Length: 274
Image (cartoon, rainbow, N blue to C red):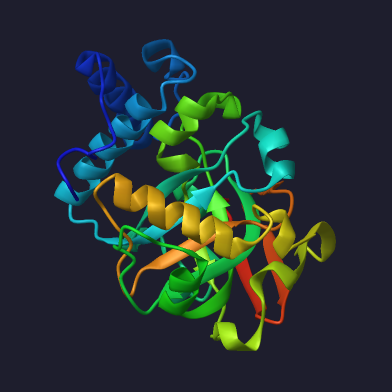
């Protein structure tokens, strides 16, 4: 990762350091912390992304590897749920991917988990051009997969403003990808439909239009933003494009299943802590 995103200009580095330290302690001690907006202010997005990068550098120094990005807060329903009004993005690391664990999600790694169903795009080409548009973004996608994102917050009680969630790596937790790999010439992302169940009970429904009108628009927003921050999207990376419907709180022992037509299904089982 770049030492500092080009788009970031922070007036008080001490505040960034203090916020990163607070979030780092919350993760290390496995105990939620107070919001960081008292340090950053409620609207200083540049400072919040500087904190996110500081925390990410710490993870990289401990051996984590970047495998993609997540786009957050793309659904109006989710924005209302968490009280923010714009999308954000976070970084996906290799140890967040539970796909190879057959969807077994370790509850002990999570603090206040919620789950949402979405489209994951897997890139076949870099997105590092200055004049990115929907045509180039579409051409860069190798395939799409159904996905469950387990969002989590280091902020106590999910008491977040936009700067809190951005600083906290866009409230990232873990994720699970479905098996089926579907190229974009076989479907339109904005036309997908989603149904998600928790322990056999339907808890969330939605469609592709819930994600900024079109998940490809969300991907375009991220591609432009990531390039602006000096870390463009690269071939092979996974992009979680944003919720297709309301997110749902989950606890140990829960079983979550989502059907995203025509991408197939994806499931996750949360381990019991008993």
